[in-house]
Structure formats: C-alpha cells, structure tokens
Image 1 (tube, rainbow, N blue to C red):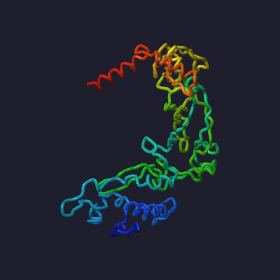
Image 2 (cartoon, rainbow, N blue to C red; image 1 turned 90 degrees about the horizontal axis):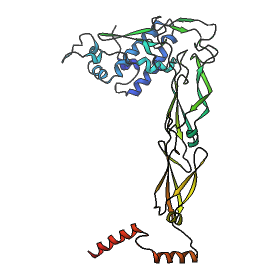
Image 3 (spheres, rainbow, N blue to C red; image 1 turned 60 degrees about the horizontal axis):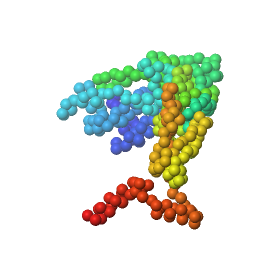
Image 4 (cartoon, rainbow, N blue to C red; image 1 turned 45 degrees about the vertical axis):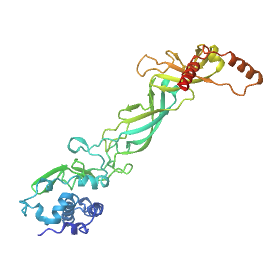
Length: 377
C-alpha cells in the first residue's frame, strides 16, 4: 500500500511553518495515542504514520529532500540523480516523544542510566537577605520554602493504594521502543512508561500519580561568620522530591547583605567616612566609633590631618570565612568647612588668615607658587 503524503497525514499545507506542524502533530498524537485507544489497531497504525510524517517534516534537511523527491528520498538505495542521501536523512526520532508526551504523561527530565523510572527532583533557589551584623556574628535562621515533597498517601510511588500495575502498551513491557528510519533502527527509552515497562492501574488521587505534592517546609540554615554578599550555600537533598520515589534535588541559598548605615565592606575590611571639624583636623583630637562587636573604638586624629586621610584600626573589620583572621577598619576623615559663622568667629578666621604662612599651608602655598611662575613665563 502506497504511503500517504506526509503533509496530508498531518493535515497541513506544504508551506506550513514549524509551529503549525508541531501543533498539528501534537493534536493528532494525543488523539490516536495507543493508551487512549486500547486494542484499536487502526488508531495504532495512524499513530505510527503521524510519527513518521512529523519526524521527517520537522527536520529542515529531511523536509527539503522530501519536498523534492517525496518518499523516494528515504527508500533504501535512495536513488535519484546526484546520488543517494547520507545518514543526515536517517537519524533517530530526535526526541519527538520527549517534546510531545513529556507533559502529557507526567514526565520531567530524563532519568540517567538508560531511562531510569525514578526521576530526580529539581534543585531549588532561595534568596536570603541578612544584615552586616548577622554576617559578622553568624547565626541560624529559619526559612520557609515552598517545594514538592513525597506524597504520604502513596509513599511516593504515585499509585493509588491497593491498586496494581499493567504492562505498558507502547513498549509491551520492554521499557524501550524502536523507530526505523531508512537504514537505521534506533532504540530509545519508552516515553510512556519511562523505561519501567509497567503502568499504574490507577494513579494516586492526592498527587495525580507524581508521587509528590506541594508543601511549605521550614528549614534551619546556619549562616557562618564572615559570609560575603553573593555567597551560595548548598543544602543537599533539600530540593524538590523526585518523581515516583526518585531522589530529591538540592536547595541553594543565595546570600545578599543589606547596605549598612555606617560601614562599607571590601572582603574582610570595613570602611567608614567620618566628618570632623576644621579645628580638630588642624589641632588634632580623638573620637569614638561603634564597631560590629557592640563595642567602641577610639580614633586618634593627628595634628594637621588632610581631607580624605585614613586611620587604620587593626582587627576591627570582618571575620574571614572559616578562619581565625579578622580584617581591619579604615576610617576616612572628611574635613568639614565651617558654615554660618558668627561675627566673632569670622573676625578670628580673618586674623588667622593674616598670620597664615607657607609653613601653615604648604600644599596650597606651593601650588600657587607654581601658578605664579607659569603666568610670568
């Protein structure tokens, strides 16, 4: 019996785009799938026919060859002018079942080891924001994670308690299916039973046959001292439960640290900008700053301090992660120019200006001397 035109099989025009072809295939495959038509030989033959048609037309090279030579492009010998067609036109079914029936049959990612029936659960991400003080001290936090957990009703099997299983009609219990294309026969894990060879008689009503259900879990997370912004903490096996008793995924906690009112962090070192008066900068002095260990540190201001000068407080920074080392605290001194002067204050500054020499302001004096020489040149 002659093969029908592949476009006719899918009910599409010859110039149909990929999306139209896939949509038509999906609709027909769902309609004639053997599990929806048990014992119907005609439906099974149509299912095979539409699989063959879509496998050819979804591939650009195969489609081009079919449009030019029809079914002869894939017949053994492939003879047409210019020689036959190579293995690029004899590939496997290229994950048709994975594309189309993965969602329909409750499938997820492929299991390893040639189609293992128990699929590993997905990894999860949780964003956790902490303060700089919490990063300094370390702490244990409780988090609430929405996830999928193993179904208690069916103990994660996915089958309704008290029911049995039957042989998969797609692979006849072998767990694998074969697809012939040209010279090749490709064997793949059965997409319906996912390699088990058996199907549940009735899925669990509480989890829909997945063996897992939605639930919020409370977990305790240890935040180590010195943890930095952007650090990732992995909690093994705390992700989503696997499908039908498969192993769980992992939970990854991404740490972000809130901006601090006083300190900025660079690795294990802390930086703070402190404004001081002009008189303190000129005459020297001292003041105290709070530290993250709930103490105070004394900062000595040298006589003649210049704007932007830093004072280092050793060992007053952040602890180094998984180490006994501690960083330093750098206090940057910003000198504030007096504003809103009283009459007396202004008189005193004017008197000081009259007495000012190059020795009291060496940088500005030297700079203006250079300018004067440039103007005279």
